[in-house]
Length: 160
Image 1: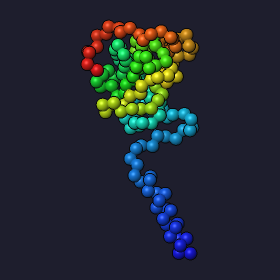
Image 2: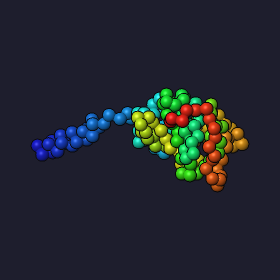
Image 3: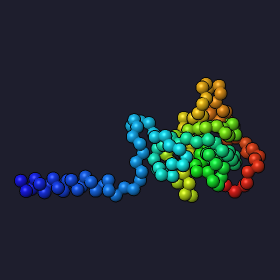
Image 4: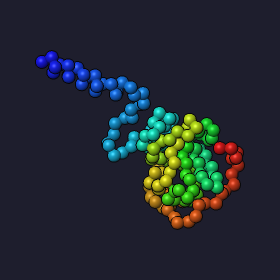
């Protein structure tokens, strides 16, 4: 009987130990297949986790090899950035068409210089909210086999 109680006590502590050492927030429970929706302000709490981040495109910056979508505020105050590497993405188009639009971004949140971001590499990672038909979708959501977009002049500073 003593051996049984000893094993029970050891198992009880072994089961509780892993939970005590974690400091990461636990996202709300949803279905196992769907990532949790969060706002841009919450993204820094979920690094290396699959999430759906919602926000409004406040700034679009197009560089020769990469496009940045800063959500909710312009750089450097943006709480979240969407990164589209030209040539590593399955879609191209006019990213400027997304300015002012509310969007959802699906993917693993990464920490880049202490700021959260998701790098897009598939079309289904970006959804424009409020569009009812595909004919209203901005050109960036239309798949093409075209080369990377040309650099467009902007009035944004060169430092990103």
